Image 1: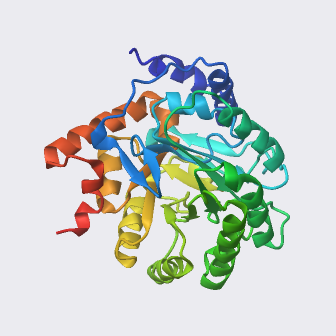
Image 2: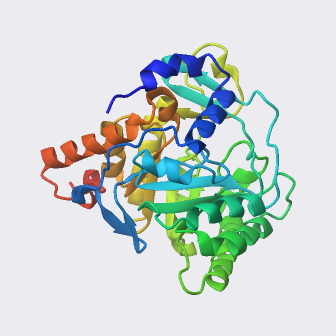
Amino acid sequence: MIDIYPIVKPLFFKMAPEKAHNLTLSIMKAGLIPASPSRSDPALEQSLWGLKFPNPVGLSAGFDKNAEVIGASFKMGFGFVEVGTVTPKPQDGNPEPRVFRDPANEAVINRMGFPNVGMNAFKDNLEKFLSQKKRPSGAIGLNIGMNKTQKEPVKDYVQLIRMLGPMADYMTINISSPNTPGLRDLQKREPLLELIGGVLEARDKACREMPPPILVKLAPDLDNAQREELAQTLLDSKIDGVILGNTTLDRPEFLSDGFRDEKGGLSGQPLTDKSTQLISDFYRLTDGKLTIVGVGGISSAEQAYAKIKAGASLVQVYSALVFKGPRLIANINDGLLSQLQADGYSNISEAIAADHKG
């Protein structure tokens, strides 16, 4: 299959980043994104939380905020798709411009602030997809957050669990975006235990037959003491898994002038090593008892494999799609198969945390 993204990429890069993204969503809604070759090799398949993942490469939250292009995303070859972040009430997010590219370093800064249509319209979009007679294989995750004006965060997350939980394969509590004031304060032990306790209770009441696993998404900007405290907190909370991690507030010196000074969360290649170390630390601190989804700076099979060997069972991509295009997913999965064969593994699960097994 011919990769047309190198041809159209210059046109997209002449547009403002958010405009280019919205155009991409429109193209996907129209069914104009060519389907990627299927990546369902048994070596890439695994089951986690009772869910089947045909391959370990997923779409990170933030791309499809309103659950509008789930089917088109699966056609690109993803093994799972996470939509959102959705909040109970609709909100516009922060003023534009709020997304910035650094092509030289394959980096993105965003200060979106959870713009979304709210849980009612989000639910309608999700129901349209779920009502299809023939659904693609792969899990659907729902990423949930609090409204900017909410002073009691637990109420927002519980409300979202009650409404959307029965429709989800898994749900992610987003407490690590740097663009919602006070959100990262929930990464402290007592607030986090209260939040997770409330969410799990609401989940068990709303989803008695098939309660979806609950994951929490953390920031990469944690010092060693915070990592140790959070790892123990997550184990104590009985959460089902953790996504590591979100965007960073760090600004490496090599970033391009002007871009480096923009406020917001940094993603893309500058985050690669930082997020891999975060995964390795949490795997070690939790003795491998917590399922980890690795995200941050993945634009190749080698980078995805490094995160898996560091302790991630699954990985997610987003920013790299801006620079590499949709063919990236197939390239990563093809490369993972080659890596597994070279290391003598028959299944991706055997490579998880290989770096910790001496």
